[in-house]
Length: 446
Image (tube, rainbow, N blue to C red):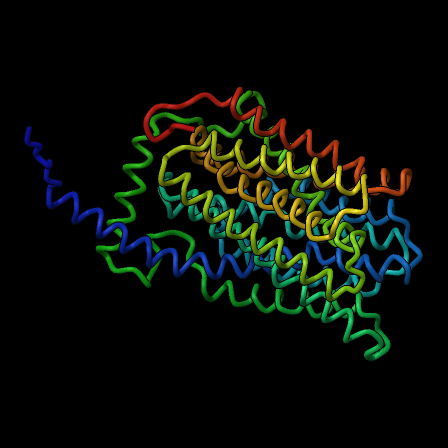
């Protein structure tokens, strides 16, 4: 029996090759710079987890004060995220990103002068308020450039910068806090805020010169390259069919609230790991800030690889539900194992760190895949407001989870009881996607 190989029409191959070439160019232009900004944002957001190792003793703050201060960041996030994305839609990305980046850098540096819990709470709130809109703004911005079949990889590449920030931030924080203590009369944790705030201000100024709001404004693309992009985006929009575009309908849309619930559960785990990894690493026997930083760096390096790999595989298979849920199940299960290890005690630090790393990899790998879902249901202004609404409400988990962990640790003296609860919540995120998100037709499959 003979088989005949069906030839691919030449014009199809030509279009595909041209599109791949243009998107390589777009990705190299956009993603490295946006990734650098996200690294800076992440460093300025989570350096408090490392500063805590010295700051609490210096200022006589309790674990509960730390937990509330770490989490109150997300209240500012919640209140200002939607307005920021609406403003981005009106004035463009580069003005919005410039404003956000400069402001969060200034607030980061002002944390140097904190002496009371109230000052700590106010500055953490302002840090969240000024950073609000960056993450959902970039998610929205990338939809202006990438069709849905290319977004999960682009999202994963951008979001992996948070893991890269962990790789860089741990050793950097350890070095600053160890070597700069006492320099010009400031503690090591104070120098941490100063030296990690300055680059954000400079990057914000550079964003104004470097960024391009829309493909049609890109003077670094030829006319033919712009046509290829516009054709890919138009075909993608047509294939997705009719989607909600009226932002006023969002609040009554059950799909939006389901997505909020899913991401809220995932962020409970992500926020817990983000703000408590240094404490967990220290508890298993790594005493110095430098040692804590290197162990955290290794865990975040694995997280970065997981985010990129899971996003790319999701794009390749055009499948979202199982790529999200499998990652969330792995993260939640590993977190429960980590809690058991911390409860039992006496186990080798290597095994405990391994469980912590798997929890981080699973949790972080689910995030870029999740952001494939909103734009399968929403478009236009509804997408702009919807992405910000989902992210802002879900990020209230970032307020509740660290604060709850602080309260539990104050009451029990242990981190493990809080980890059991967060593990169950993360597993619930995977269940909600499998049960609540039905498969969609063709390219809308989720």
